[in-house]
Image (cartoon, rainbow, N blue to C red; front, side):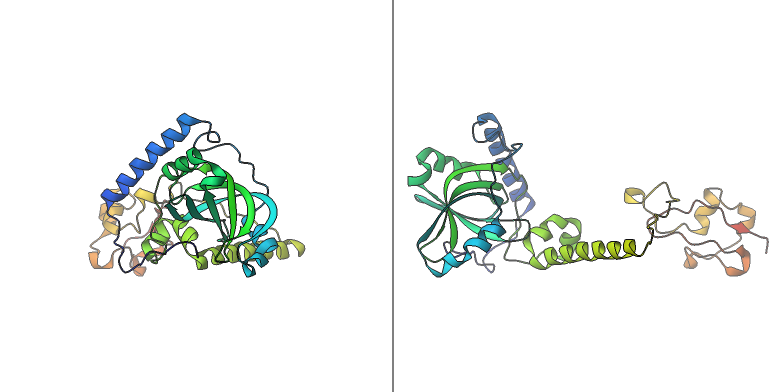
Length: 287
């Protein structure tokens, strides 16, 4: 974004748990203020906002304005998106709001357009990660950035958890455990999600046209993992739970955990999948 200075990843430090907790506490206080005010658009989570178009549609229609800096389109639009960058200094504030597909547009809040009280409320009540609705004229900034000169703004949804540093890649564990952060911050993750969804929809449509019927396999396990997930049941545990009588279990080395000797099993049972219990009792014969 041309209207702000991007932070340097080399100088930024990883946020500690105490810092994140403090940020959440401050955001919760701001949420209470939004809910108490009510007049700022129905609180921190309004039922609806007066959106007239989308950020990708604005870029598709008025993207040519970036070739002529400091120009106006004459069209008033209302869009909503997530705040991913902010610069709240002086009488003119800048924010980059992002749509679900990653498309961004700059919002400019001027003291002359929104007024002193509204600008002060924006600086105090909005944070990175919030969903923001803005309404105003589509323009091109002095540096040629496609922007919206905001006349009205409203918090569409207050975010409590802070966003991670967008200039540093998330580690693999965070990507898996907090999938939403990966989709917000990484373009490739969004592309993969869209591609997979469209591919599966195309496959189902093709199979349906050829009279294929999709049938779900019934689940035999009543417990689907989670905190009680167990990768396998050892022979010793089978004895403890009464699956196999102790006088038939014999001496099975613990080194072969999760396996049954083939010579002792008439119909070798299918080993349970990782994270599931084996409910069926195997048929065992005497040695």
